[in-house]
Length: 171
Length: 167
Image (cartoon, rainbow over all chains, first blue to last red; front, side):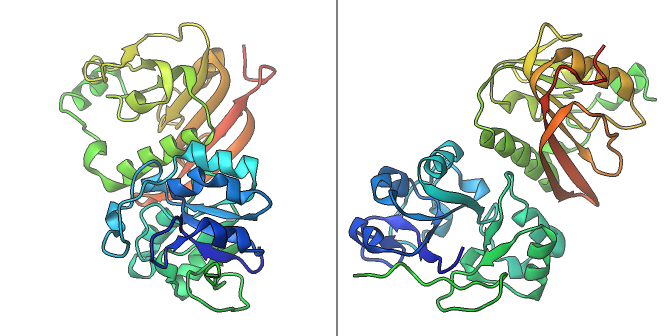
């Protein structure tokens, strides 16, 4: 998926992880939602005519982002698997994988990386936690059969396992 | 092949495989259950064949859960929401067999029992190099992940009644 933009929450918090409904509506590029947060499900009407990827984290499906509270302004819930699947069936979104525990893959052993990136459903897309990757992680992503792997870093890089993603624009 | 007596001795202690404290097994359980969640089903009736103490069984997404387990010691520790049965009681829309379709067990009998019981999804898990390739219908999903020093595989079949193994 080319030109995938990055987003997390849909809401009014003044924080990089939040985009307003208007910002999502104004985005003409595909959007990769990391999480996937429940506020995306609650604001799903703005996904009409949008496309992209819903990157889910296995250990947090139906749970919350307590593990990440030092980086985010408040506690938010994540969608359940059922809700993510519903979004993907109603709108032009595919399901992607954002690992089980959202640990930095570069700090793990090869076995741990392969466990983290083993998705419990069929998918072509991986998003690296914290956007962090290294040669070992890329090799594992290839071996696991991913077609594309995305970083969360800003910019553009022409390599299928280190695709950078710019945030959805803030109008 | 393991005798019932050997099995009872093995299960004299709680959790002899250390499933509940081994990260790879906790991961494996989460993996199975998330696959089932992804299938989007809440099953009417689930059967776990060779359930042990029910490490996975009690969390299966089903209204009614039956377990077949040879060891009385293991079965005495099954979760409260799981009913022990000695043979399938009718049909089950989810049948689960993990770590059992290996040469060291009575795999033919187990496979026959699965085919007798299944009506919809059959999930087979185990160590890739040990798992015997019984066809239980149409393979709709297959997953692999590192497990202890092995590769574990989890196959989801859509049971098909015309399977040559039935009967």
